[in-house]
Length: 145
Image 1 (tube, rainbow, N blue to C red):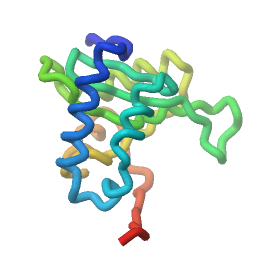
Image 2: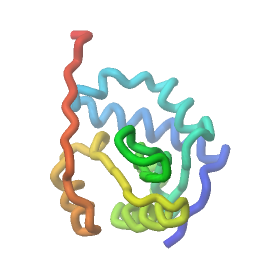
Image 3: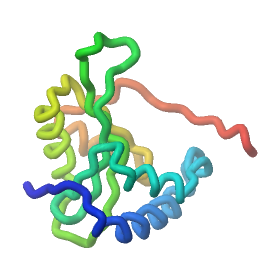
Image 4: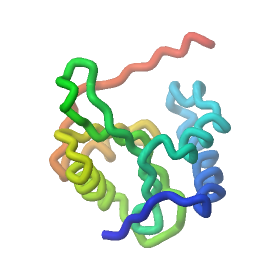
């Protein structure tokens, strides 16, 4: 499994992929709150872990401690998975990279989401094959309509 840190050379491809992904996800209510320049700036800011997996996917993650947990209880929070390049990578490699990353940073858990996928269930099934289970559901209400 091949992965590398995000570099400045990836920025243009990320911008194009982000714009396309948001356009495809327009059926999800939360997408109306996305400000593309802000999202792009956050992705490329260096504040988060950014990896290019199999020269195909951008994985953005953060190490967090849930508000209810002891200070040393680290969780690796997947923030974004985005197909950036038409590389050889398979999405199935993402859970394995997240596992390796979590072990490297000493995290005791990994959380992932289905925000940019068209069908939540398909992605849930893929993650379930790697030991993930649904533990909560996020709901969204748009107050700007």
